[in-house]
Length: 220
Image (cartoon, rainbow, N blue to C red; front, side):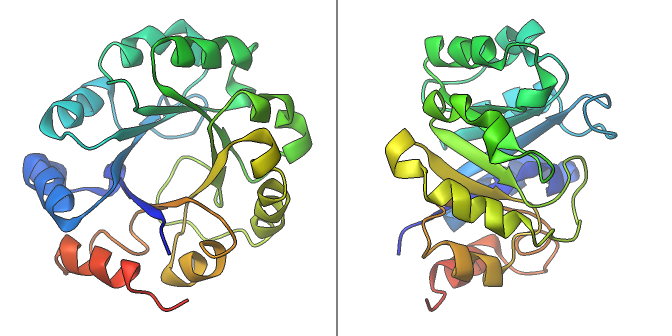
């Protein structure tokens, strides 16, 4: 079974960031997930534009940029200028007055447009944008911090999105509290990729290649 694995780089060791990127790359990670937080849309600061730019220069793997910022359209060019065609940019619809305008800027720059859907955001409120985006990042925890507990009602939202993805032509990705059990449950149902953080990948005292290999060998 084929599914994508993305490394949540806000969980990486910043004292050895170059080594972290190379180890993940050699271990078989599919892309690097970059969480940008402004301390306003979410109550935390995480990665910065410079962090994103450094990782973009350090790897040829795709970047998966998750903008947890207010009014991303005001600053979207700062991020797009340092990304490559084919990289993904997610915005939160609630953070923008006219999210479709921001998504169009992402498309015009040659990037993959995506939206991130919070646990408290219903599918119905983002319905029209599902026809614009190529990726939907479903948050299984409230955004802003690593190491949170999975919110079980999110599973029903994923089921609803799975029933719509073929007609609307988008793929579904999981972000937050991603365990082996969740991959085993939702990958067979059609979730395309999983963001890996402290639950499964980082801080485990194990080589990334070994961890990623074990995940890909899960028995479904």
